[in-house]
Length: 456
Ligand SMILES: Cc1ncc(COP(=O)(O)O)c(C=O)c1O
Image 1 (spheres, rainbow, N blue to C red):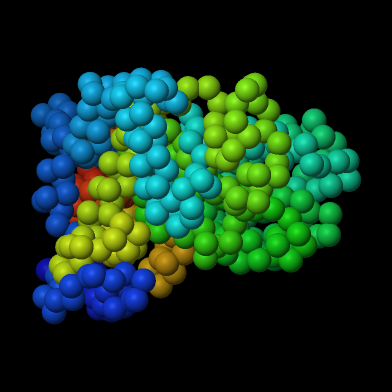
Image 2 (image 1 turned 135 degrees about the vertical axis):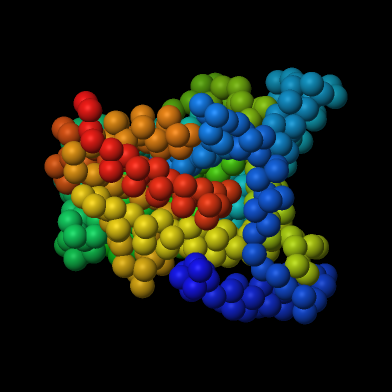
């Protein structure tokens, strides 16, 4: 019992953070109370997600599949169905539902502006991260010529690699690869520094690895790239459910994410610095306006999903609007929410790693030292001797636990680590709606699977 209490991180950091937020002059009109209880209320959070109440084979469904896509709260479902029921139209028309559709899109752009900390006209909606990245890689490639260089990494999801490789092939541009450090699956920053030079025009890097959970020092990478005048394109898809995005502080040129990874609908959203969105030339149809961000959005958008995006940003903001911060403006509330999310996910991660380390034959890929957990999120890639990742995922599914196996398109990493041909990893994705009890249940299930003779 003592271990359980000791494994919970101190809440004082969160309290101090919230106090600072509340006294910050940017966040006026916020009443300050002394009665902070700065923890996530898991009962009320879980009650908002209808999917979490499901059962599988008589077991409660346990969703450790967040990295592949999170569940959505009722408010997102309502926003999407209400749009279809009430506001459904194409945009730009001179009649009521079309005007309401324009308002729905504008509201979502403002919400994502708060989420990224940028202006609403720097927010571009697209089908998903992959198609946005292909589109932007083409437009960026128009400015590049043979002899120019771009930098990609072995740690990245292929959606932030292949678009750049194919663009480089088309334009005669040289590709430089940044390696990883095998021992902890972090980016090799020394290698990265040697790959950036006066010819570098773009660095494509992930904020966090969707396979091993490593959080990259993206701010430092932006500075290295900007020192030589290169652009930085950040894939924040995996980071967004776990950590606060602040494009103003990062000073990145582009950052892209997918709302289905942070409690919203299946769409992609990109931040682009205004100067780039205005300067670069998209491939587009006539007579589409030349105004940003519209010139970067092709065809009719998915309006019902866009309605859901405002609701998913509001869901996150609401997590922060408690304990004296009820009237916090949306950005301030989002910042508080991520402090609380971080605190809870850290407790889940500590519990999971401590338990996994005790399972015979189990290897965790990535950072396992709790003193370095600030460099990772709660996405765990494991292998267990004598059990393939797909067998483990199937066995866990029979017990109600949803995990993923394979490479999840982090194929440059699974190849680099030599596990691609033998099934990749089993991925356990911890997210803020998971509980300590669910982590304990997973550990017990894995112990049971390992103790049972393999009958394959
Ligand atoms: C880190 C990362 N980048 C990019 C993607 C691709 O995102 P999308 O499905 O929106 O194209 C994913 C999807 O799993 C991902 O995890």
